[in-house]
Length: 220
Image 1 (cartoon, rainbow, N blue to C red):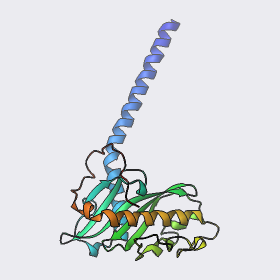
Image 2: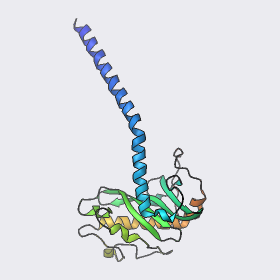
Image 3: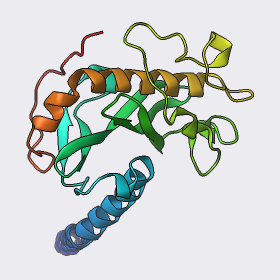
Image 4: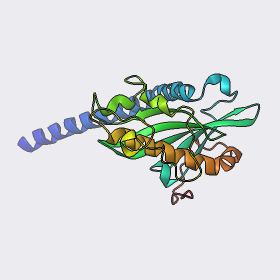
C-alpha cells in the first residue's frame, strides 16, 4: 500500500514537473520575438541619438557588422555603419570599458569618417547611484562632452580627466568612472580611424552565427 502510494505521488510530481517545463518553454518562445523587437527599438533610439537620422539614408540596424578588437572589449563587437547615397558617413561601435568603479561599462561610441566623435551613450553599467551613474544621459549631460572631439595620431594627453591633466571633467567624489569612459572612447576612436575603410567594405553579417576566433589586435 505504501509503495503504491509513493509510486502514485511520484507520477503526480513527474507530471507537474513536465507540465511546468512545457509551460516555461512555450512562454519563452512566445515572448522571445516581442522582447527582441523591443530591444531593437531601444537600440535604434540610442543610435539615432549618436548619429542623427538626417545624416544618413540607410538602415543602421541592418547595416551591421561584427568586429573583434581587444581594445573595444570582449568580442565580438557590433558596428552600425551610416551612409548617405552609398558614401560612408559614420559608424557606431559597441565598446566596453572594463575598469569602471563597479565593473564593466558598456558604451555606444559613434565616430564620423573624419575622425571626430559623433556621440557617445552609456548602454549598461553598475556604477554608484548619485556618483558614477552621471555617465547616463538622463542623469547628466557629461557624456555629451565627447561630441566633436578628435584624437591625435600620436599620444594625445587631452584624452584624460582634468585630475590627470586632460580636458574632461571628473565627477565630485567619483573619478574612476569618467576616467574609464574617457579611455574607452579614445581607444574606440583610434580603432575606427585605423580600420574604417575595411569596415565599410564588409557585407553586413550581424545576423549570421558568431564565429569562434581569436580577437584581432589593432595597431597602437
